[in-house]
Length: 119
Image (cartoon, rainbow, N blue to C red):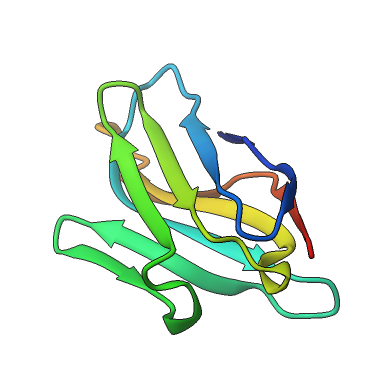
């Protein structure tokens, strides 16, 4: 299960950090993760991913968004700077979790968290 936090109402130009906790007693390894967002009336889009091979960002957020992880806490983060009204959306974290048992690697989603940027 992924639990997101850190959203809310922010003025344009401001910053915030979204957090995503991997809540699972089995303590799976995080093999890949990403943040998606869905603006009103739009499809869900991928904004940032990270894996051992590196991180990628959609062009519209490059230089403003930073994805990171803390394996010791099983946390995933998205730092957003210089927020723009067009960043208003529900943000979802997504992770590939690897279990040592027969489940192997599974993909899970957070419930989504709203970020609203006022102009």
